[in-house]
Length: 180
Image 1 (cartoon, one colour):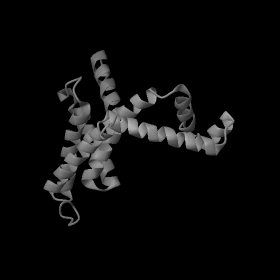
Image 2 (tube, one colour; image 1 turned 180 degrees about the horizontal axis):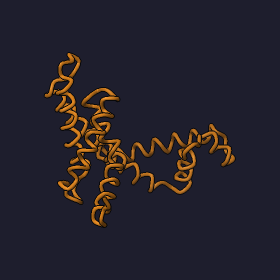
Image 3 (cartoon, rainbow, N blue to C red; image 1 turned 90 degrees about the vertical axis):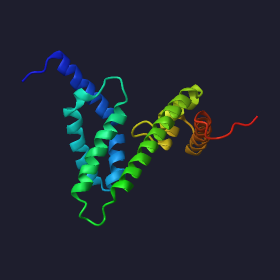
Image 4 (cartoon, helix red, strand yellow; image 1 turned 90 degrees about the horizontal axis):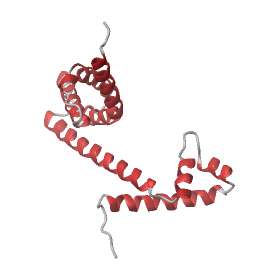
């Protein structure tokens, strides 16, 4: 059976949204089921449910929240099935853990956005240094060799820039009081 263009577009939308939020969904489920293998199974079942029910998702709304609700239901179903095991958390505790996981995920997303914003505002040489040090497969030592500086000097610069970023992120998120 072939998909028409609207089905294909909807499929691409689902895949794009799911891939973007899959790690957050996994972390959310893991906080509820407390076991990596179980979390993987639950996320897999939840992803199938999300795909089957994707016509119920309103494009442009918060996919992460929608996927968390589907994943929460899948996790609760899983926990109900294994509830005979005395090591399984009660439903109230699981609901509390789910709520906390949602808050942590939102906080993490806000911190990532703040980090991106703060990194964009760095002077070009600091931005270039961080990009070189944190590139895939790179190390501070390898960047130092390429730039002609000592590793110790680069370590100190990276440390200074990271402290500045931390302060800017906290300030941007209103986590610290700004003084004079």
